[in-house]
Length: 100
Image (cartoon, rainbow, N blue to C red; front, side, top):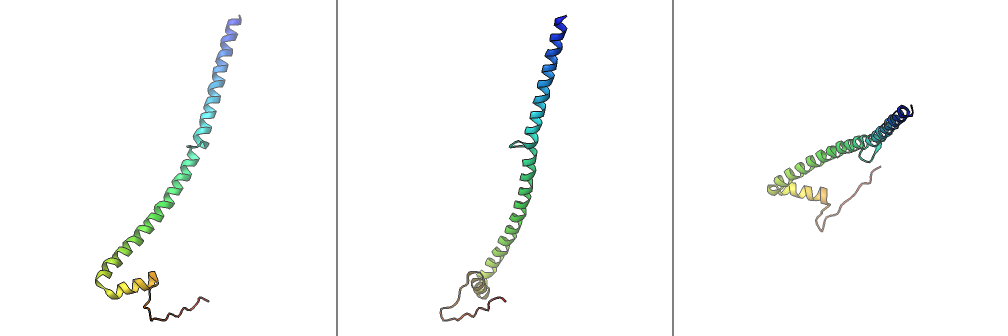
């Protein structure tokens, strides 16, 4: 009679081990270093970076257009140099009105 008890105990231990292993695997899947929570955070970061990249690409294309136009237009080139680089002529006086 002791043989059936030993078999039942063995299967209970195997079942308990499988349950613990499953719970541990689920924990790692959801909250581990490479888990789904981290994956969602990374996806959100990726979307933000893609948006920033699109803005930077637009700015780069705008600057390229200004450069292409500026090669033929001395007035535009001077305007860009004054506005973006703060360049002035040596004998020029600049008045700056501080914001209120």
